[in-house]
Amino acid sequence: MQDINERIQNNINDNAVILFMKGTAAMPQCGFSAVVVQILQSLSVPFKDVNVLADADIRQGIKDFSNWPTIPQLYIKGEFIGGCDIVREMHQAGELQAMLKEHGVITA
Image (cartoon, rainbow, N blue to C red):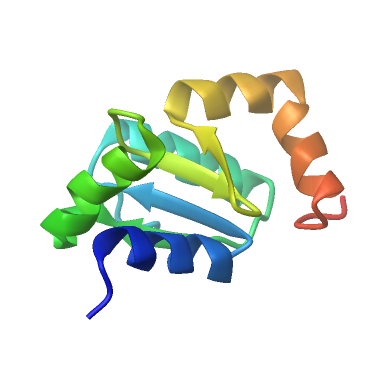
C-alpha cells in the first residue's frame, strides 16, 4: 500500500490542476474552498477536487506534505500555489490567469 505522501504526490503528478478541499467542487463544505472553486470555474479551468473530509490521512497528510496548515490547497502543474487568500489575490491581480496560460491549462 502506498504511503500518504506517495498518494498525494501521484495525485499532483497526474493532474495539471488539483484542489485539495473540504467537500467537492459540486458541494464545497467550507467557504474558503467554495471561493477557490468559483475562481477556477469562472476561468473554465479543468481541475481535480480531492475531498479531505472523506480521508483523514489525506486531510493531515496534505498539510504535512506542503508544510501549509490550512485547506484548501491548490496545485498547478505540480507547483503548490497556496490557499484561498493567495488564489484570490493572484486572480484579482491577473497572476493566476497568466500562470494558467503559461502552463497551457487555459488558452483564453
